[in-house]
Length: 81
Length: 399
Image 1 (cartoon, one colour):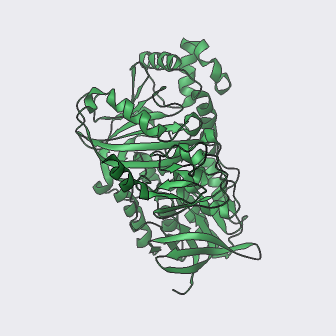
Image 2 (cartoon, rainbow over the protein chains, first blue to last red):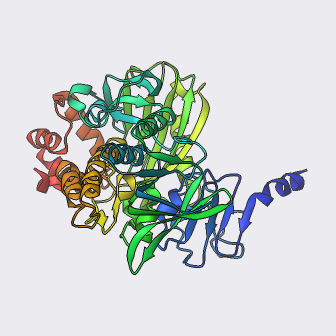
């Protein structure tokens, strides 16, 4: 049963290898966008994307009030499992 | 969609953007106001507290629709629960009205429309247009269309993200210590205590490291309960939510409270920018980092600056000159009004974040005993110095 629940939630995570965003958690507030020191995040109304300017500094991971952003899969600091 | 042409394009229909558009249109500019969301004012990303005088200063007609509650003043709580009450007459800047921001933003936009500004919804700016190095407008995306809005002046009122300013070359980047992440619940069924709902509450100390928890009443049992924490005190994912949830559990009056709404956002608590104008571009409101670094309040400052900018744009339009030099009246006027205060509060904030719970307790206790008649950093420090000079050693340079 637990296995099913996990699968049902996981597709909401988009991991483009740069950063991972959980679309079910994201509230599109833009806190990460204004915080990003390299301007690597773009928010098109309700769709958050990271580009290759990202340095994986993790400021967005910490500032996100709902924890919607995480390091990409395989990154040693990744916490979303 | 064909390209559009206008005198002034304002990016962002928050209070600052709409107020700029309103005054620009009023003063003869052909103005387009663009907003990326499908609805102006929603979703709300704000604690919704506003000082009354800003409404009068910007000549905004009062309307009951956007006033959720009017409070008598503010209460500040130290970590051990010591209470300091400040009545509105002395609190001055940050309390008075608790807004319905979704209604309020629409109301300001309506005023802009009334003056003739054109509003485009679901329209996201994706780039700043440049020709031979000079700004000539913005590239926008509207649903499936992409087109240019050519303008003599671009106004960046895109809030905390401040993207338009960055594309145009302004340094709106923030240090970790000058970023506050915020989370707020709109909670209902809040029980009695602390003279709720007559005061806006501010809870200080390690419950919200380098920030504070606020309780702003919306009606007799509903309030915005939110937290702001400085980014340099956050360590892992969802840290902010943990701090707020733990605090709510310690509040007996909130044991049966239910959440109606959740709001998140980022707040800048930095020193004022060196420059918010350039050739054919100006920043206003949060995008120009005009937020008070201590309270995190920015509605009033944004609207006031928007009014000043709109008037200046009108003058520029008459002369047909939107150069940096022509925009200086705006730069000078907003700085005269708020720069010193913002800078002093930023310095004070950098000291405040170093205080321990014990020091907060001592300070609030003295102030509660003596009484505060003017809520300004300098006035408070003077009182403290008279009663416990040791306590204010960290702040010596402010007195």
